[in-house]
Length: 144
Image (cartoon, rainbow, N blue to C red; front, side, top):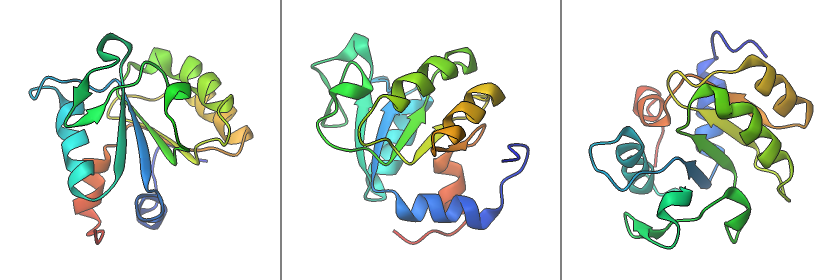
């Protein structure tokens, strides 16, 4: 897939179909972008699972925090990545091992790694990179 530009219908379909999101790199700090995006996603009815090993066992926005993706007790539709792009290959490797696999890995703004995307796509996982669902959702007028 061409990750330089995404068709609006592609992004709209993803954000309309997914229900559960693992937010990798979630922060309890309200000043951090991950916190604001998590709050936004929860407000739109998504079930969000914060993932941050340094916050394991605590809560962020009333949701229990998990140390790693494999700790989440139910299937995840999408992994929303708030980590530097250099970590995306290892994240893709972690996602590939999940059963069932999430349908989508979403790299936040500036999170892009084309080789990691190619590997995820070879395993049937859709990739969106350098985008924010909290920007795309209202831009595309997605109904909650």
